Image 1: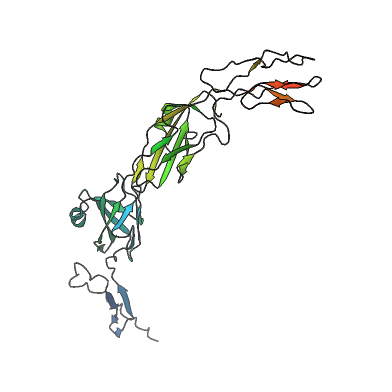
Image 2: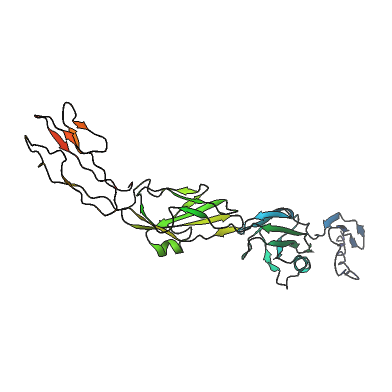
Length: 331
């Protein structure tokens, strides 16, 4: 039996006469390969592919276009553009420059894959412009130009209580102030080291006491302050437009009064003859206003006491306690 003749090998595809410099973007393309030999032609399957197009523009910019009173510590964000693999970011204070900028201009801040950008050096009460161009291998789509305006820097706080350099202040004081114009909250700094309070930031543990909305602060609530000690404090006013550093203030706490010294009658004396005016040595600092609770009966009827006087009528056979207490400023 004669051997079966082998089919001729299919011919190789002839090269295209020409290849387009660029296939149309975002377009469906169909193609087919027919197998041919001496016995005939076999029609191939039709295949399809679609060329990639440039990405769409971004959507949902944050802050919204035209937003005002924005923080100087701002982060721009947007919703990812369909088809984008990265983004060219443009940012500046001149609208025309941002609109026309390319990646060789100062307004170009770089290419990135993420959908957030945090600009640096943002100033209060200034209008900024930004543009995001989505990119992929098919090309770049120029984005719309957006704008926002930062808030005004607040004024310094005023009307401090206690006043700067005040003395004789309670060891459980309440510090108060009037908020500066435009301030939303207040950063409070407090301590005994003037340099530390002057240079402190919100990251300075022990000196920074927190950010608050109220215009008062009580430093001696948990533990009373130390008597006869200088303290320093600072109030920074905070608003979207930034933080206004306050001036350093100081006060000195009051000196604790000393105990009175009993002169007569001697302590625990029996059958003592009390003079009309009992003697008590007043040892205290000049200018301190001291009051006395002179006698308290241990048991039975209390002795007569006249308002504003230290005269008593003692009763024989009764024991009394001479109780002198110095009172200075509230401490």
